[in-house]
Length: 357
Image (cartoon, rainbow, N blue to C red; front, side, top):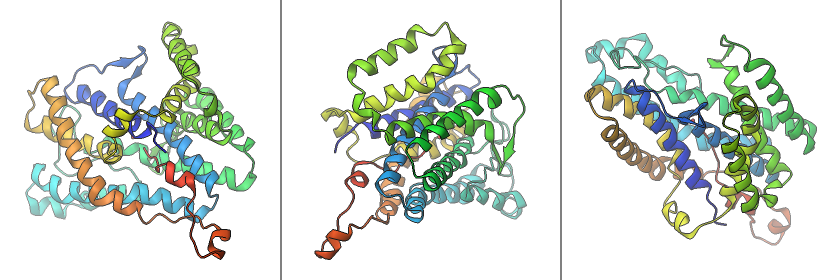
């Protein structure tokens, strides 16, 4: 079944790249509706789609082991290659330290903790004098937050085995985001991640999950999607209220557009899902370009970073990610097995494993 989700993920990944470009050059980042930077908007879109598609996958096959195998095969193969290339190729080339000192430094191999989703952002002598110094791949912060969302979803669904459990989880996360995370100024760190981010972005994941569980997307007509967008635009001056309403209006717009199909868009994205590769490679590419050409203009910078990152993401998809996804465990249909055939869930066919910033 054709849909627009690959295209939206591609746009979301590029929004993160686009937003970061201004930060790396020391220029104020453009905002969406005056209060949300474009980079975080891309992450919100990612979490919304992820909550929707991952819940569809769970509902299709509510099996814990197979569920986490699918999630892991989507996240880790591409991530592992990215981390190894960063340590053993980018690091020694860019580092101000001699190669021997770089590789003997204890913090070099410490960067491998990113493979187990423990965020480590610096490598010895790398990007020391950039506008955002020492940060090698700041985008990796979202991956443990995403995986925590998977754990919360699976645990809730497995224990309570009711669609209303998704609603309860969404209410809990929204309440924590509003009454706790939104009012807390200091970080609350668990496993190297700020749990305030889990509450904020988890609301979009949870709302996407509720939409999937109750199949609400069948009501997302072009009229409703347009209305959601219009309300967002009209509410711009009412920032406090819009921040709350965005958690519901943005998922309607994103999922409503995602479930639609367009021959042109389908053709543009038919070769693969490059969004994850763009997301995990953009940050180090952008830091490298600005390190080599500190006086580059914003337009040329965005263009070069987009092209280089896209090439890396294409290679990552075709050489690593796509091959890993072929190993995904499939739900077996017992009636089909008795007749000597194997039936794969149609939902698994239709919905790619989503991930995220």
